[in-house]
Image (cartoon, rainbow, N blue to C red; front, side, top):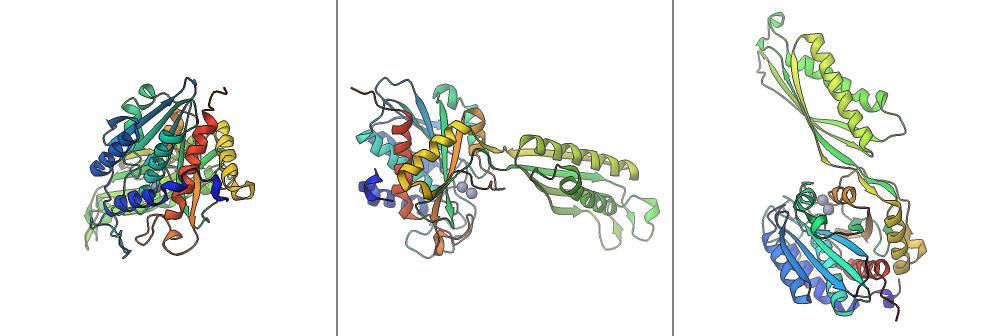
Length: 393
Ligand SMILES: [Zn+2]
Ligand SMILES: [Zn+2]
């Protein structure tokens, strides 16, 4: 990567101090009061039109230049995680039990840097919409902003997101058209058996035995019922009963998590799960309820925006440093909901290969890499200038 490619080089120090300030003061989803106030204040200082309280603590900044008809949405996330930070550096979290362990402090900063540069020196014509969303980790902030009229009030032709990726070198990007990240559904199965004496099982219906058969049968959804070419995961993570040492349980609750890389597979997992539970319960003459809540949709990158995002990254870091057909990741991302509402592209930016920058997201000793700030913000600046071309004189 050559230095003159970086549009926001001069903001390096400033961005680093914003980022470290956010890192010191992390806030959980929908509680990003300090963070969003700071974001709004900075955007106003740069001269953007600022809208607070979009979908709770969300902030939108609008930068209009010239008469170009095109518009673009750029999205960052602001929330932190309920994790006790183990790092000991000067900018470690001041709020015990809350930590920026996913790098949203960096995402917010990179978008702020881009907004500042574009407000001062941007060469584009059209409308750039800067979206700072709350509560990404819940998967609820994006839907809250959309339900609050985000894309009606601030229409965009396409929407773009970026996430840092530990273990990938700074100066590399990865994306793909189609499914980029998985859907996540949380399920809960409540079995109503009939409890009784452990020595007289024939008087009741042991909810553990019914639950155990359901746990086993659920394994066949992925192994026997889905098309082997389609990825899915079904994990039972909790098995709770009201049994005691000598008391057979009358109730059992199974909880778990299901992932899929397309909506049909997610729907199929739910249907098969309901079928299995109903069948096994019928065999034992008990009832059960199944709740299946899809918290995150699949993150689907649209072909056009993905091509353009990859091209933009290639200009920045060179052909060999952009993987435009990376493997999908089975984690989930709230950007999915924005990419359902508008054509979109989500891209990974390398966070580094050593130390805290290489540790997995959501680790207590992870840190966003400040070396990515100028690169990530330059990616945004160039994307705006590419997608909203200035009128030729
Ligand atoms: Zn996260
Ligand atoms: Zn994240």
